[in-house]
Each structure stands twice: as C-alpha cells, then as structure tokens.
Length: 72
Image 1 (cartoon, rainbow, N blue to C red):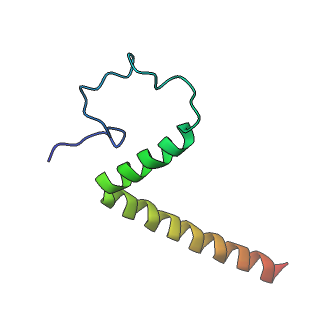
Image 2 (spheres, rainbow, N blue to C red):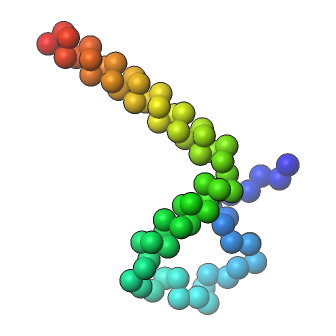
C-alpha cells in the first residue's frame, strides 16, 4: 500500500500557484471545513485514531481533575 500525505485531497498534478487560493474570499472558512470532511472521508482510520487519542486524553484529564479536587 502506497503511503500518501494526509494533506493530499486533490491530485498531485494540481498546481496551486496559478489559482486564486491564496486570495482571501468570503467563503474561505467554509471551504476549510469541507476540506476537513474530505480528509476524514479519505482517511477514516486516522480519524478513529485521533478520536481514541482524544478519549484517552479526556479520561486521564478527568481523573487528574478528580484527584486534584479530592485532595484539595
């Protein structure tokens, strides 16, 4: 299996220099959300890994907060 960059949403032959992607436009933030959705659909295993990591971090953060509240 060939490894790709998770930032490759468009084909590698796409040239960003000739486009107006660097110019600010009103819907630029919405386009970023659609790109994130496209990345999540292309790489569901990375999304699962990120969600598991977030859940583990939240669990240990909650345990640390609980211990801090009980000892203080």
